[in-house]
Picture (tube, rainbow, N blue to C red):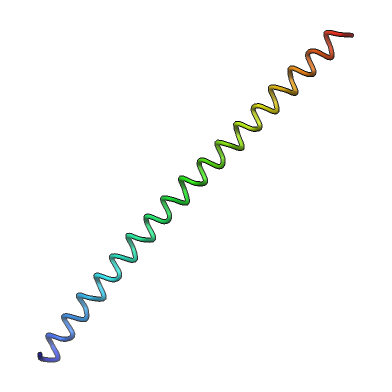
Length: 65
């Protein structure tokens, strides 16, 4: 195999590795964004539940005065 063919083959391999790594990073980034969205939704739901319970508790306390 000539040096030119070896260089072209090496470039092709390097591009394949680069594309695979790029796809893997993209997949990981998407997974992290999904995890963040789920976590933030859980935080929002917990906050809403706490607000609801606090508001109901305050309203009950005031109605007993």
